[in-house]
Length: 596
Ligand code: GLC
Image 1 (cartoon, rainbow, N blue to C red):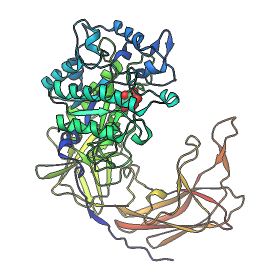
Image 2: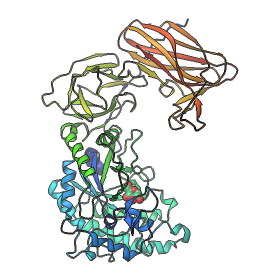
Image 3: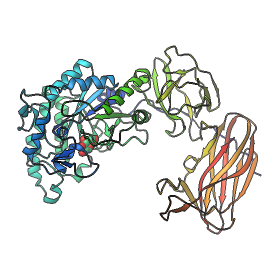
């Protein structure tokens, strides 16, 4: 029998709060966290169809109609006849953004189709030349933003332009374009149009460019991008520029924030500002065939998840040709706005906290320091029916805990010991979507890294990615459509170790889940913790079927009870699992579970 391991606490004071790599210009942006994207242009008149044909390239974006359906430059503009110019009122978009709790709006001033939504003096492919009263949507939006106190950003497609004789479209991959011709487009259109946008419309808080691959893979040169950026810096030094300019933050730290892929949410914490652009369904421009609308809670969790990793979320509306925002979008935005009215404190000016993003099974944490107190906001994605909220990994006791929705801040009961706080919840969740618990500390709370958290059902799930020490094996992710769960393949004896904080003495069961394809019992699994050793003989688990009638045999993962262990005190414990298959036979280890 091995003696048990006394753990040491790996106490770290909780790192740097806020975002250390945010420049002065971008401070408002990381405070704002949530903005509106507006995709609206000539394509909005088509609603995803052209001459009876649905947009080519299934499941593609409505705003790509011009290119996808091979429409002529002039004929494309006949779509403008479907626009109801008397009804179109950009102020309504801004009012919606405000009600939705968004702090900035970004309009597609010029999308890939090359058509400018302002009265541009550069060329004649712009809204001023095609509307009876020379409308200027950028001007109207700028006035509305000013009136309602929101910041204005402008999307500008610099790389791709389908209307200009020398602009880029993907067909040029076949035909090619001489760099000097492309530069004509750049100097004749991009540079003077950006000059117009930054001269005639007051403060532009952000220019949102859209080149989603690195400049070295495109016709655009780094020199052209730098020319564009220095023009922006000279005209409006406070205007933010995103990484889809074609320059990454790593390559040029003067880029203000990183733009992730379309609908790509954050996966890890960053110290520089970043943002995900998101849609409510799939397309950015209005598409009448769209039907897979994301639920309000899905969108809300996208925002919360990003903020919990220091990111922003910019959610798109694709208004119709009369300016109307589709009901499915509008009502979700308003629901999120109502949530933010109550819980905005946990989003605006909030940042990541220094614990692993997947530590807790109940949701995410954001953090804010203000007026001498630090508050953690626990975003509960699922309200525990047993009214117990386990918070693992923080050694500092809170001073006060309350529901963020409760204006009286009535204290919730809690107990705290070691690296564990248990919060007693009321029976009723304050929100149908995500309920927020505010936890106050006098000082920045201390954390313990690399421990396994207690789950809401009172156990500890020990998987390979939560082990302490060097991880030399590769964890295979979920595969075969999720029918094969994440696991590690073990062929020679391995010892895996985890660290736990057990909050109360008592007996706990230990179960191990694995798959073993052999046909006889060979090898051993040994678990050691406290002063107990439990042994298990590896058993064949055979196969199971993932889906019927498809030759879909997959390894079967089975849970085996190894025994019971008595934890004499609350405290830190090491758990060690030795897996020893024999004769090079392969065992697929899934998890070790400690529970009631
Ligand atoms: C892509 C698309 C574009 C859309 C944008 C939004 O770049 O080409 O249509 O505007 O993503 O993020």
